[in-house]
Every structure is written in structure tokens, then in C-alpha cells.
Amino acid sequence: VLFCLRYYNPWGVAFWNLVFFTASVYACQTCIGDPRSRSLFLVHALMSFVFVIVVTTWSCACIRAEARLEAQKAMLHGERSGFRDLMEMVCDVVVNLDERLKITEAA
Image 1 (cartoon, one colour):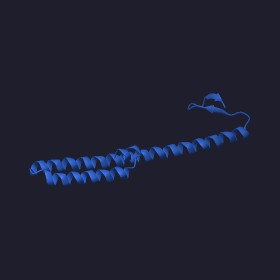
Image 2 (cartoon, rainbow, N blue to C red; image 1 turned 60 degrees about the vertical axis):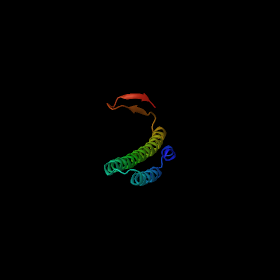
Image 3 (tube, rainbow, N blue to C red; image 1 turned 90 degrees about the horizontal axis):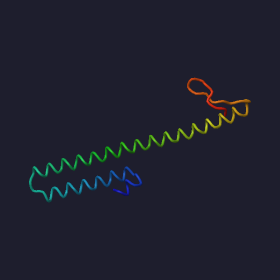
């Protein structure tokens, strides 16, 4: 599980979580004789199984969204650089403007 978390393989985390849950259920059925203790253990095992799956899915979605934003940022940076180069070729003076349309610096 730690290997899957280190290299962040969400399907690996889900698989090993399922293996652990299955082994826990089997151990519970064979080792715990009291039905109340058995049901309490199974509820906790199921809750932890669902929690790990939800957190893994959520964090995978966050990582994908962040990677997508980084790719868009790099693409926009390239477009901005290209536009700036084109402006410098065509125009004599290029300046940067802030939100209030005031000159911030000469380019």
C-alpha cells in the first residue's frame, strides 16, 4: 500500500485496500465468536474501506485537475511569449499595463 501511495497509483491503492478488507472479513468470520463484536468489527472495516476509496478517488481527481491547470498555464505562457515577440517585431514600444490601465514598466 505504501508503494502505491508513494508512486500514486489509485487503482493499486484500491486493490490492496480490497485485499486487506477481504482478509479482515475472513479473519473476523473465523476468529470472532460473539455476533455483536463481529458485526461491530465488520462495520468498522467497511467504513475504513469506503473511506480509503473515497479519499483516493478525490485526491486522484485533485491531482488530475492540478496537472491539467499546469498544462494550460504552460500553454498560455507560450502563447503570451509568442504574442509578445510578435508585438516587439511590429511595434516600436511595448509597455505593460495593470488593472487600472496604468503603465507598469517598459517591456
